[in-house]
Length: 276
Ligand SMILES: [Zn+2]
Image 1 (cartoon, rainbow, N blue to C red):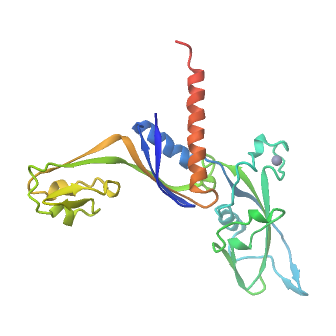
Image 2 (cartoon, protein in one colour; image 1 turned 45 degrees about the vertical axis):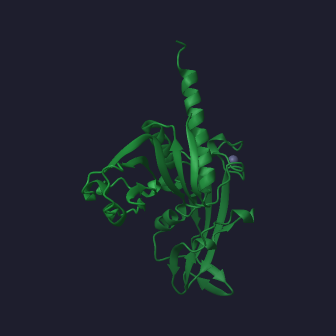
Image 3 (cartoon, helix red, strand yellow; image 1 turned 45 degrees about the horizontal axis):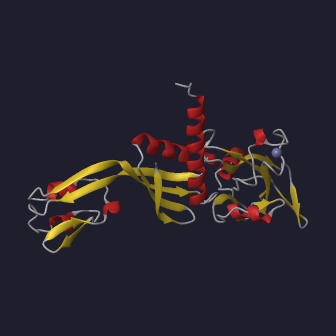
């Protein structure tokens, strides 16, 4: 039975070991983490056209960037996502029209000269849906320029577009199996000095592989050891995973979703198999 051992877990980063798995299972988990965890992202942006009056002064609703580039930049801003709160628009009671169960509306209203940041997006309604990364620059407005925008976020997955990708840098390596033959080791400590990942320590006169999780499987220890005392292989049942999220979901929520999603897929697959 596959198991997960958490090594590190912060809000947006995780490192864990998948135990008793197979290479296929590890890759399936990687792919679900990348493409199938739903998140909210801005998908529809409406620009106010024409002059904007602020305090008796007329501003032009114009920016140095094309509207479509501004829209694209807004799409990539991580939008806080709660899987309990939101559903896909296609599954929503509103039948895809857009409602508070399936979408979040933001307004962006700034006059130049200034830099417009992600933090300037104001959620209409629930203040808790304010984006967490305040300082992502969107546009720079010159004097007399202004932007007034309504942006709607909806749920999607990265299968559709990368802006709905909740994770970044998802990868894994095989767990190394390193052993030092104490009969051959001459205590020359070349491996402790020269291993770039600092995997080895001296245990009396004999080297010992201690920091296995740091090993990048580069194999330089095999080259450096004059006595050929080290053996290095890969364990294809254990995988060391690292992943990050963009902040729209926590690393724990993302991993939890991916594991449940995989489990449901396997269950469905078993159900669909004809009885033997
Ligand atoms: Zn809806």
